[in-house]
Image (spheres, rainbow, N blue to C red):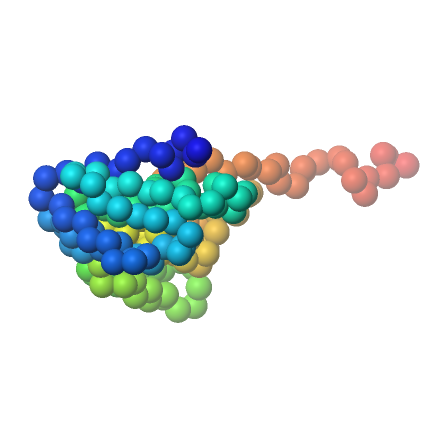
Length: 189
């Protein structure tokens, strides 16, 4: 049995869970999330726990058992605490102007980029450092997609490190061109 899959998901106070067939709906203080899961997984609400039971012992069943449990746990955590993702803008003249679920990015192109996220996502700037974008929401998967899309507009380049990166992401830097006598030099003759 999957070590992760056999652990029950605890439903905290103020959160309600409803299971209808393969559909799970979680309501909490921050909002409501609904997801469909694979029909081979049996999901039950017992007391104040959600239990995921797999029907078969095939490799695929074992693979999605723990995944299903973790996705439900992420839903419960999202409606109680919410999720936060930070992104850092590095580069001279690069900036962001957030407005609820919209963000205008100036990234060195001839035009600014306006990105509109789903309504449950909110953008803010860090009050101490205006180069850090804070993305908040209740769905971990949606926040990950939004962060990846924003990063794709100007990925960090390896020479100067300019671009948009996840907060704390390490960029492997490359050495630039070597100056002085080197390739192409005749050696004085």
